[in-house]
Structures are given as structure tokens and as C-alpha cells.
Image (cartoon, rainbow over all chains, first blue to last red; front, side, top):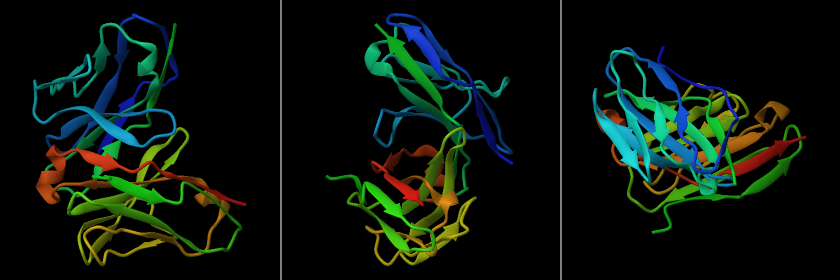
Length: 112
Length: 117
């Protein structure tokens, strides 16, 4: 079946450090890919998305590129802030299917 | 727009009790869904609906019922609560169903933290 694998957390970084959170997927077709973020005590919200191979999604300084050859959608940010501390979820959805498959989430803690 | 609202925010039940988690959205979204979030397991789909009167099971439907009588509301019923249902429950909605779901953002409510003793 379809699945999403994320790197284990928690990830602890100092402010202004470079962030990479790895995400790989398995899917029977060509999915759309998403990153959602969950701040403490809140629901998830969309951070960025890419709907076809080689697309780059970007938002709030975060970027991720849809790599079909490596079935990956790694999340990156050049300089993290304390306010980026949250749980990040990679997700996929296939055209014509009625569900979104989420990874297990990666907790990021940014220390001053 | 209030977006997706959920009530209650917190709930404690005893084993065997029943209750309904409420979810409402004011964005006229066709697609609505319920997830549970457990440590180390991410979000797992319980039930979903592609429109009023249409519901279907997700990957963990046992012990839960849903109905969708209006576009706006999608309540989740726990029939006889068990400790294994202790979790955080999220309702989400999205524009479109079927193929359109693949390209569209899901909007999540703030969650209900449920403890079953």
C-alpha cells in the first residue's frame, strides 16, 4: 500500500542552523506531496505542497522538491528560528483516491 | 470564517460510556474526515465523507460511527469507549473529493483530547 516514511525525531537545532527533514514515499501511482506543520496545542496546517515531479513547494522560508527518481520530498530551511519549533508531517495523496496518507511526524526543537 | 471547529477540547470517559465528538466547517467543503493521532503513529484515518449522505471507512474504523446529514457537520460517535481509544482526534475538511483531494489543502480543527479510563 501507499506509505510515507519520515526521519525519526526529535531534531534539536540551534537558531539559524540549516534544517533538513527527510521524507520518502511509496505509492502505486504519481502522488501529490505535502508538508503539514503542527504547532503545540493546535491542529495541522499546510506548509507547502507539490503536485508533480520536479515541482518545488515553498512557504515561510521552507522548501521541498518532488523527486520522482528517489521518491523523496525532503523539507529544508536555510536558517531556523525558535518559532519554527513544531511537529512536521509529510503526506501524500493519489489522484482519484479519497484519502491522504501521513507520515509519523518529526518533532523539531529550535533552541536560542 | 471560523474554519473547522471541534467540541469539546477535552473529554474524560469511563470504559463503556458513549459520546459524540462534534465537528463543523463553514467553508462549504464536500470532503470531511476524522483522524486520530497517537504517539509514534502519526495520523490515522477513521472515517471520511465526500458529501452529505455519503460516508466511508478509513483504516481504523472499529468502535466509531459517523453520519453526514448536512454539508457543514460531521459528528464522530464512540459507541462504547475503550482505553485503546484514548487519543487526540482531529477533524479535517477539504474542497472537492476524488481527484481534487490530491491537489487541495486539508483544513484541520484544533482537536479533541480524549481519555478513556
